[in-house]
Structures are given as C-alpha cells and as structure tokens.
Image 1 (cartoon, helix red, strand yellow):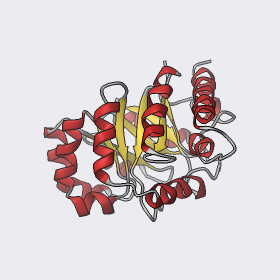
Image 2 (cartoon, rainbow, N blue to C red; image 1 turned 180 degrees about the horizontal axis):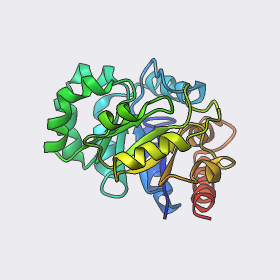
Image 3 (cartoon, one colour; image 1 turned 120 degrees about the vertical axis):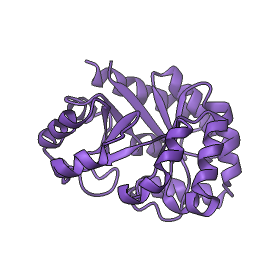
Image 4 (spheres, rainbow, N blue to C red; image 1 turned 45 degrees about the vertical axis):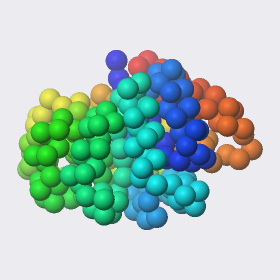
Length: 246
C-alpha cells in the first residue's frame, strides 16, 4: 500500500491544535507526520506554508514546544521534523539529533542543507538511528543521484518540480524515477503540488506522497472552527489515501 505523509506547521493555530490534528490524521490513514518547524524565511515553501510559519512565530513558537509536542505525538504516529537549517545550526545539529532520539522522532527533513554539507552530520544521524532524508530533483543526473543516495534512509524525497511548494507545476519524472530505482531500494515519496486532484497521477510510479499546502490551507481557513478544521483535514487525508491506492 502506498504511503501518505502529511505536513503541518507546529504551533498554528496553537499547540493543542497541532497535537489534536496529528492524532486525528493518524486515524484518517496518514502514515507519517512532518512537524514543520516555523521559520521566518521558508525558501522552499509557497505562500500558504509561509503564512502559517509566520503566524506560528507571531504566536510565540519556541523549539522547546516542538520537543514537548513530539514526545506526545511520536509514540502514536511516525514523526519527522521538517525545518530549515538556521534553527538547527543555532541550537546545534548534534543537540537536535539527541533531542529527536529522546522524543521518538524518526527522521529530519532539512531542504536547504546541501548534500555535501550534510556529510558532516551523517554519522551522528546514523548512530542515533535518526534518518536524514535525502532530496532528489528532476534536474539531477544519474551520477548525482548515485552520490546523494549512497546511504539513503527511510525514503527518498522526490521533488516533483523545480520551484516552491504548492505551485502545482508539472514535469516528466519517468527518467529521474528510473535513475533512483537503479540506484537504491529505498522507497520514493513525491512532494510538491500533491493534493486531492493530483495525488493519483503523481503517485503512479512511486511509493508514497507528501502533502503539505493542501492541509495547511485548511488550517489557515479562519471561517472554520478548530474541530471543523480537523474534520476537513481528516476527510482530505482519507480522499488522498484512497486516490493513491486505487
């Protein structure tokens, strides 16, 4: 069965919502959860996730709150941290790895950490059994893919197109998927532009999908109560899970 990974921005609308939404998404069939670490300049994300990031920071989000939430959520659903390198660097990457292990988090996604720079930290990730997720873009050559995926863990994050999340572009990915398959047995999950309408097509030749903007747009809808937001997010998760496995 193909997997569904859901991204939500930690601390928006508030911390209780994050916890409730995480557990509700598990009930709706989500296999893994990306807890987004709010950052003021999320360069790989579109305006929807950027807005949620900024609102969470305005609400006073702190990294210690991420740790407290993760300790509650990770025992219930496979949980990864998704964030930009600056907060990791300021707190200390090794500190983050140690804290992730204590809370039960299984992996980290750091989109602006280049592969060559990540090698400094790889051994510590491996020793602590925390996966550092590798990214592959449609523009990567076979030789580059072979380099990036030497020690791939958990899943390969295939970026569906060049650009930011939520922009809905289309690219032919058959070549890059074939190159990944020839390089590693690690599952391929596709992200960027995945929603209820696109999920079936995007999931065709991969093992799972990563959905962010579609969930966060519901979180940002202030016409909905907290309970209604969670209900809408659950319904979306069920639709996407059915689409990618039909």
